[in-house]
Image (cartoon, rainbow, N blue to C red; front, side, top):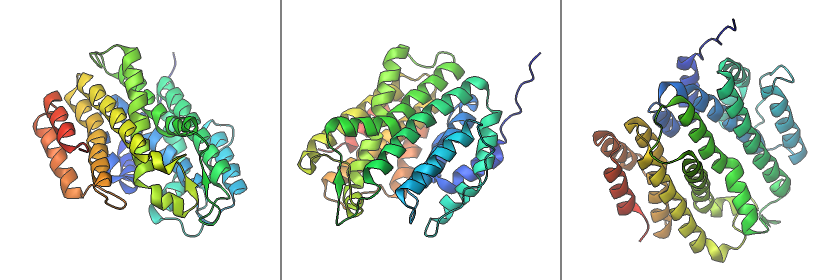
Length: 309
């Protein structure tokens, strides 16, 4: 008789999660118990690979080599070891790299189906990160590089975020009986478009900062208003996704990023540089969602009131 894997040490896992992302830490606590560990482990490992891909002071070929080593380690082809933090890296990212062996150990303790899904989504994410390094590794403010086409931007947003919407949906369907009122195919499509929209919000918000480093994710800067509209439409998919969920906790957790995202886009449209929703406003938004227990009507009202005019 097979022996069940030991449970992930959630207290330690979530302590590390709280160090690297306070907003995601809030959302994940609203997830059903069975989803928390795979989502948290997947997030921490994705943040680890992202820290490697964006490591300051490292040559592109070194970052690509480290991403290859990361892939070998998470798939068990090599025993993992702490990743040395390069000079100039943020303290919380350095702590995350040091905890890499623990993250891999947590991955190994997940149920087989959950571990398979985490590895699948990490495969897409790291592919997107490698493409990023290959495209922009030698870019600078003096020699900027732009994505060549709209299709390239769509590919990027899918690989680093759209696949995450699909990942959440697979976990929900497996762990939550009666997960949603919509069929699986539609939930997967909505989840994919929602994830892509969240990454597109980041692209639009960080456009000036990225360009200062030579990275132009928008193929044509003049088309930014059209991309903003596409992001709104994708976030609306996230609202539909959230409203279809049967669990109030899940509705709150899944709606929150869309509501913060659409408010970010409104601030961008108002001309705010590096638009960021203030924490008190986020706390009020969370309080309204919790007070209504993720009411679909409340979610719709908040989205409509905060979307760009």
